Image (cartoon, rainbow, N blue to C red; front, side, top):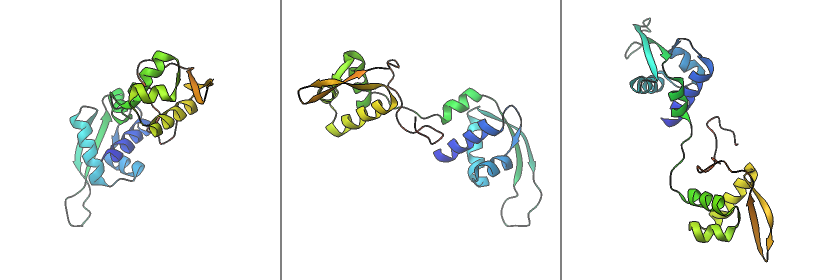
Length: 171
């Protein structure tokens, strides 16, 4: 259901800018069947993100089951739709604690993160590697056997998002 919502929301934002669109257009753009698309659109309608404009009975198909309705929508709140399909960050996680330590110390080691944030060695290693790839930290020097890292791009109190974006690409 979440994947359907993201793909339908993305299709609405990209292909239906400031105009009316039908359920059939959503089905063709996303490849999701009528039932799944209608359920997602009804949920978005209840949340006030899209508005149902017209609801007419379609042509008879001479098949078993309910006739397909031609439903026309328009976007009521683009910002809410973009926020609804955007990736969400969990709050107060180990990554949040590690980011607080990094911002406070500015120059730190992986050992500092393990001790203060209470994270495992593998988690700390992965997190520092991903922050380095994204350009937030870099290697500063060595103190004995331990490598020291330096914060070079501070994005604020909220930790940076390092996972996959909603369009499927990495940062």
